[in-house]
Image (cartoon, rainbow, N blue to C red; front, side, top):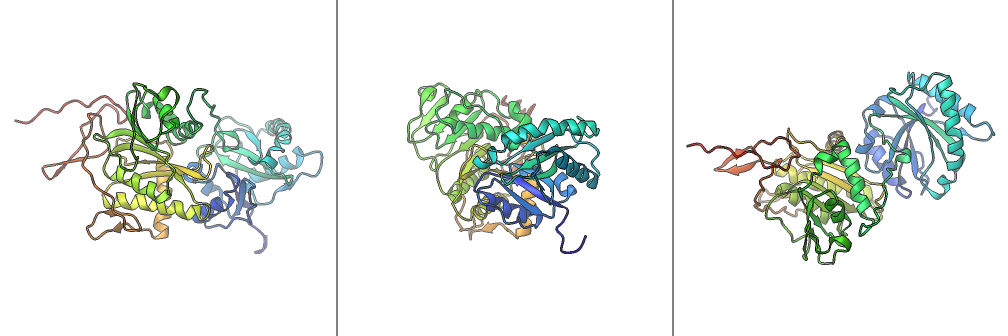
Length: 442
């Protein structure tokens, strides 16, 4: 191979149509590679210089704009003949041999999530079973395998051949989770929170969302997110000047407070805070930082409505704003950002201040490590005001407000008598049962 030839492998990342530039910037920041002239509104990008080791170390959940991340052959196959299976199979076997992959657990044939891409769905459905059968004949299918084969067919009738790591890949075809719209939900926004729970919590949803937990929904109306929480048996304080709809009106599980979500502060700490307000990303980031610094909620899910231009840069600014505030307060932070399928021009985020006993998103730790590495590489540093309080890049101080903690275990520590005391132990960090009372010393 001469020096002018392209590398043998590339990244193939699925994304929402219109966000090709954003995922290209993210791939460049993560892997130091430039995308190959991304096609606007194509729903995918190709970036050269990929390696199998990097695939094994990169959960797709740690990439904000990627629905799926595939290690692919750098040269696609032109589907010009009626026999499409033979050339694809030959390229796939060559690719597996190059990476020393003996078997794959399955083979998916996919296409872009666009109007033009969906026209390839019939071809994909015809190719997939025949290709799977051919792989079984070659003894290349094994249920316990580490990798899954992916064939990605574009409207230009090109087939990209590659694999994903089953440990880190999105488990749904096209990277799209299948969630049905409940008929009695007050708005479709409930799907965003349902998907966020699925993405950020994974198999821990039952533990993380226990009945009789307490939650605050800022900017709740008409109530899609409140409805999602209430449906899981969680008691919700819905904060919004506008009206709630449907079953949420006069519901014993919901306390509706007619006020501005930016002016609300809880009297006792809660388990969850969720926020889907239509506001500037930086203002939402400051609000979330306030809740984290003050230990008002153990877990937070919020949306950032991104601008039309420089979306990735704005996302990094908000990330650093929250991280700087937590750094100043001496608090560790897990902050994961993901553009969900049910999002539009926005990104959904999960934040928590973890402890050693905390259980949270199954993939948030890996995502947080990746974010911290990117942040360190950018040279981001905590910003301080003259008074030494936490602040964002613009110098706006994060207010520190005292708040009572409920009888439920919290991940934070409290100050008393100038000394830090650990929170009382509990059976489970997710448990809503009050911890056993500690005996007073005489």
